[in-house]
Length: 267
Image 1 (spheres, one colour):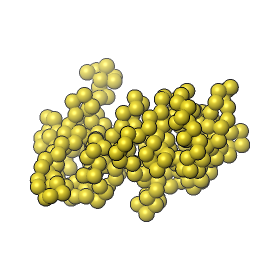
Image 2: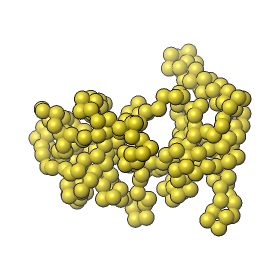
Image 3: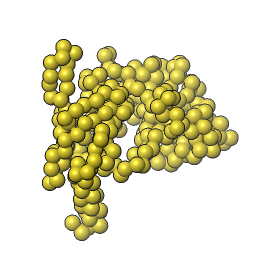
């Protein structure tokens, strides 16, 4: 049985999905049935937790994929424990699935659910998706930053009345190409795609202060296994060269070296 479903609170900003932004993400869309089946099988084998968004993104539930049908024409999906939310999912006109496996974002949609059973238990059934988005960028190695003691990005911003203020956003990850920022839903309007932030500052421990310009490239809803959620704003560095890029590379190399040393028992 999947973890309990959660219905979005009133006023929660509906998430944006790269799957529905064809112009920007078409190169990441898979159309091959063989490739789609392969990825779905991986999600089943890993027991990946998926968020299913419906009701125009206003509601969502957490689930897992249980199996593909014998003819590979559809997928069996775990139900939740809340009868009312299961009912709403069954009558939804469109359901968008999102997850992340090995830092690769996966998204696909189904037009509807049917009721079925799996190993004697109630489950959902949906036709095999015609397309699937696999968003994987490997231009730079991406390092996940500490959660317990987060690194902060200091961003000068302006309010609607043109007054200035300073925003702080914890880093989720960093690479030579940009950063992932953790943003609360009530601040999501401040991080719209293509927004440009100048004079941002990131203090990289034991390396130095990085001053840079950031451009927001994407923003999407993330739901953790315990049901909490936030917006991940993916930002790219603008014209980052020379010493500033070297600063990031030194930090990433050192942290990764320390991580490997701990894993091997040498630290």
